[in-house]
Amino acid sequence: QQQVKQSPQSLIVQKGGISIINCAYENTAFDYFPWYQQFPGKGPALLIAIRPDVSEKKEGRFTISFNKSAKQFSLHIMDSQPGDSATYFCAAAGFNDYKLSFGAGTTVTVRA
Amino acid sequence: DTAVSQTPKYLVTQMGNDKSIKCEQNLGHDTMYWYKQDSKKFLKIMFSYNNKELIINETVPNRFSPKSPDKAHLNLHINSLELGDSAVYFCASSRGNSEQYFGPGTRLTVT
Picture 1 (cartoon, rainbow over the protein chains, first blue to last red):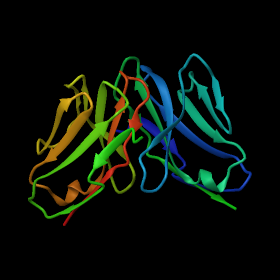
Picture 2 (picture 1 turned 120 degrees about the vertical axis):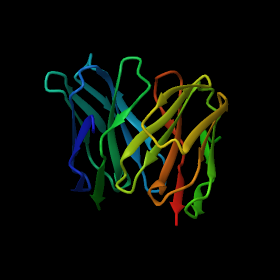
Picture 3 (picture 1 turned 60 degrees about the vertical axis):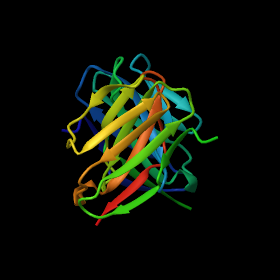
Picture 4 (picture 1 turned 120 degrees about the horizontal axis):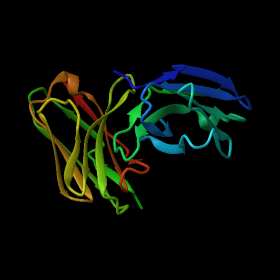
């Protein structure tokens, strides 16, 4: 049973556009929400992470928005570039929990 | 410079064989993990060791056995390989339950 639901499965965006990926969870014990970026043939790499005490976190062109009451969080990629073409995974873990539950992934393609 | 390394990168073997994948991290982390990524790219944790002690043991066939000789190494041994074991296996490490750093993966193909 997948504890984190991620959508869409894939998206195509023009260079300079905004990519938005959404995730939802049910387990209210989750309190750590990272996003990972994976390029073909490589391992996932941590991109940005958020905890529920803030509603938004921004790092460069990447922003996480977090809605605790709705149990949803999303990744926004601003000014998308061809180099951002990758698979993005959201994940969640509970306090002091070593186990990350991953979403199914979103393949982002940025067209030049 | 490599933070988390795995060997081999590719592994092609026949059904019924036994194989091992090795993982090493030079980040000084105390926790290591094995993940399986299937053909649909879904990532699922299999095992985790903290200071050489098993702390996560998900529902995987007992043909899979992890071994942690020290905090910097975590190996995965698979007995009697089956077609369904074909996947990419990732090792990861972390300091406690903080950010996890993944290795480059081992693509296992069972024929």
